[in-house]
Image (cartoon, rainbow, N blue to C red):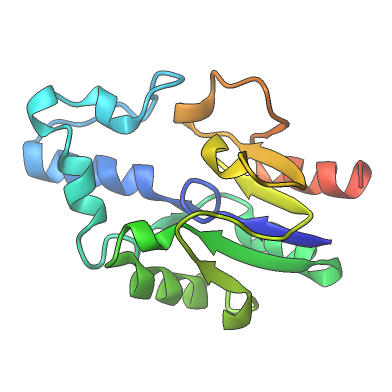
Length: 175
């Protein structure tokens, strides 16, 4: 199988970094328990809710994100039997390209640069797409796995996975 995997909120955790930066800049800790169905910027005062976009457009924001638990081990296992591709809509954030490439090289050195796709729209040919954003499933013809993130917890129309172990279970047990 050819498996396409999103980066942000699937293998990398930008939410934790935003919370840390927001606390640094405003002295206000954000609760890491975010209401289901809301984006993180819904949890900050309106006059600073665009700060999220300032942070993600800064050079270096994507370079030191924390890993989503279990992602490295799961991708190694998937790669043993499948073609694994990282597919990120990185073109939306110009400064993210180098950061994301360096981050992937550090944490996923077993994924070849030839299997990394930085794009705008995720119009890709794969058997499976694992993503946290349903907009990326719109024209996808294969199997979709919605990786849980606070913003998508109220969405029920897609096959959902909460952890990387669940991804492995679904792909290996259900084929």
